[in-house]
Image (cartoon, rainbow, N blue to C red):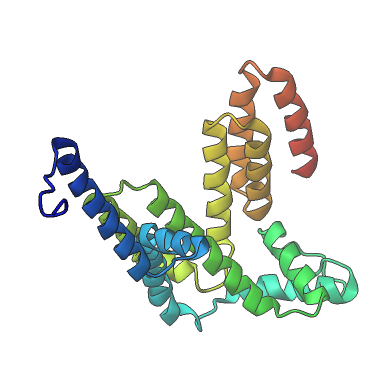
Length: 239
């Protein structure tokens, strides 16, 4: 009789929806699958980086046709590199002291690869392709996260000169990456790292010396004159 005469009070009426919602969420938790934290982080990264993957995929696809077409300038560098690795002397042939190269840093990397028994031809192409991919990735990262930014990143990824020069094994794209990275760090007032990268660009291509000199002269007029004077002295030794 007590159960039949039971009446719901106002407090109990308010509690009923709360209990029902709690039960619904509990059933959902029981029915859902557990997602490991690492898997969830990977999914979130993939969701955010789909645009980067798209741009790099298009860049690699369009660079693929030029992969077999290695120009003669690459073989000039590789000849110097092989001779340096085999004889220890930076010459074209034995007794020929002719400086027929303009990319000392790139040549030194190829010589080291040949000295270690690696494939210098393949390494030259891989470095050029990786540098081109870095340029595409940097533009994609800096582009706005909207339709216009996506079109800009895709335009750079599909740019025919970049695709071509990134596949034939020259130092052009490596020089561009060092140059851009150096000036970006310069704009952020990271003087030491900026000068170091500009110095590497000067060792990669002779025109990089102009950028190095301009950066050093402008930096010498800033507040950190002592640091820049020391850095300029080191740069002069390398150059």
